[in-house]
Image (cartoon, rainbow, N blue to C red; front, side):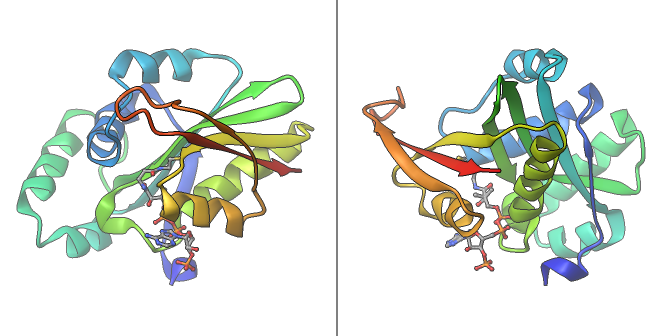
Amino acid sequence: MAESLPLIIRKATQNDLYEILQIEKVSFSLPWDMDTFISTLNNPRGKNIVALMGQALTFDILNHNMDLCQRTKREYQMSRPDPAEVLVGYCFAFEMRSMIHLLNLAVMPEFRRKGIGRALVGEIISLAALSNRQSIFLEVRMSNESAKCLYRSMGFRHVCTWKRYYIDTGEDADVMVKTI
Ligand SMILES: CC(C)(COP(=O)(O)OP(=O)(O)OC[C@H]1O[C@@H](n2cnc3c(N)ncnc32)[C@H](O)[C@@H]1OP(=O)(O)O)[C@@H](O)C(=O)NCCC(=O)NCCS
């Protein structure tokens, strides 16, 4: 299924931030705010990408959700550089010496289980390899089985646990690493 989606992955820009924030809010109990996204985007060591799909296909899938549909249409008129595309996911990462720290990954709920998360992480792995990084690491809520399943399937392994890492629930974080 993933292979048949007309998915475009490109570098994230400030014009993407409105749509990114909408996805962020529905994806995390502790969402990043606009300032955090802007400072990560402006960081020269950032590896920040977005996934886009064609408007017609996206509207077909979103047809049952008029609120989101209308909001997305408004957003096209406001700031989308190419109104034929809808932003459906993103991944923000950061170079740290020989490693890449994967900071944030989310896919619009209506578009999950279609291979978009895998495509985004795959692109970060390719970028890391191109810039001669040796490994990628990330932290993930212990209870986030879907994300852990994705990472495991892409060769990440659990290396340690950071106790009570998340301030909203006190949940532990699993730290996962992939060698490139
Ligand atoms: C985690 C997330 C990014 C995955 O994105 P996605 O586009 O749905 O992932 P993919 O379709 O590429 O899935 C790839 C693999 O991950 C695993 N996976 C993804 N979602 C899963 C789920 N709900 N249950 C079990 N496994 C899942 C599967 O192995 C899947 O492969 P398969 O569909 O061939 O079985 C998405 O669920 C999301 O945005 N979650 C909320 C934000 C979040 O938790 N981000 C990660 C923070 S560390």
